[in-house]
Length: 88
Image (cartoon, rainbow, N blue to C red; front, side):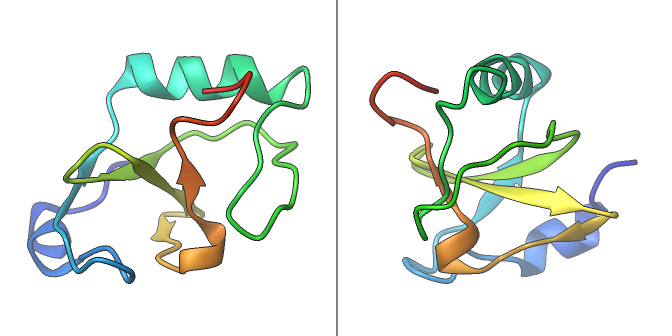
């Protein structure tokens, strides 16, 4: 399931107030490939250990917000920096 278009028009990054877009499948694959060897951490410093099925990307392409149980997790500390060392 994907986030509705109406919700996407409303949601913004909680930090920069930039729009977000649905993450492409190739990005999800890249993130999930980096999760397996333990190379993905959220902004709170917690290791991401579970596969991510869906997510939103900040307009500038620098931060990824996971969608869990069809609910976008739009918290600064839950965001994943996409330029992590050794990871995604």
